[in-house]
Length: 71
Image (cartoon, rainbow, N blue to C red; front, side, top):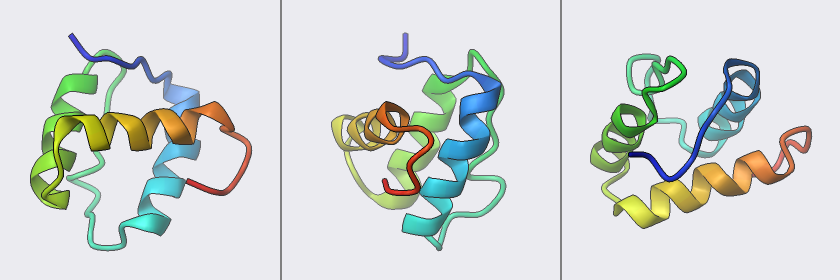
C-alpha cells in the first residue's frame, strides 16, 4: 500500500513539478491512474536511482503546496 494518495487533479500539477525537476523522465515514467501510486513510485525509484523514502518524500513535498511551482 502506497504511503500517499494522489488525486487525478493534483497529479496534473504535481506531474509538471516532477517533469521540471527531473527532465530525463518520459511520459511512460510518469503514467499514473488514481489508485496506482505503488506502480508510479516503483517506476520513479528505478528511473531516478533513488530509494522509496526519497521518492515518497519528493511526491509528498510537491503535494503540500500543490499550487506552488516549486518541488
